[in-house]
Length: 107
Ligand code: FES
Image 1 (tube, rainbow, N blue to C red):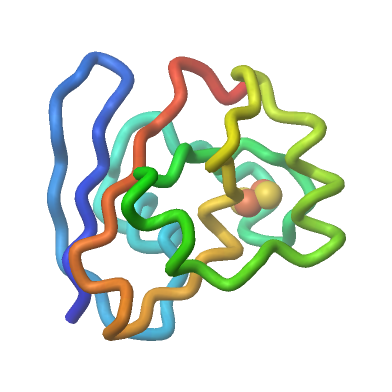
Image 2: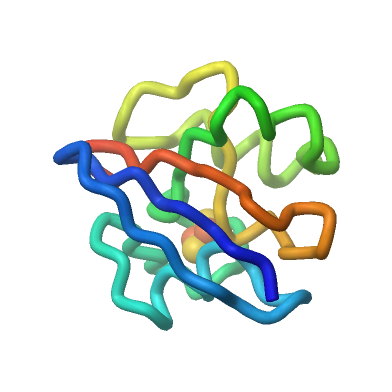
């Protein structure tokens, strides 16, 4: 049961547990985390699930595939060095404690 912490746009934090195998996006939308819109439902087609992965975690994630990299060109908020699509981050035991920051806007 990985723990994830979302740092929201207003600076507040929201922590939750989620089963391994689900995406960070699905965990967020299932728990009503504000700021994760996920219009396309996880198909890497909308970029409204954009998050900034905490720098301490960025290297622990598998590298983004080409379709994720392409959609990261379309984020509403400025893309950063650790920007990812949360629908493409699958939770594993190795990601227990993951911290991501939610952008100020997704559209
Ligand atoms: Fe649409 Fe992630 S939910 S790109």
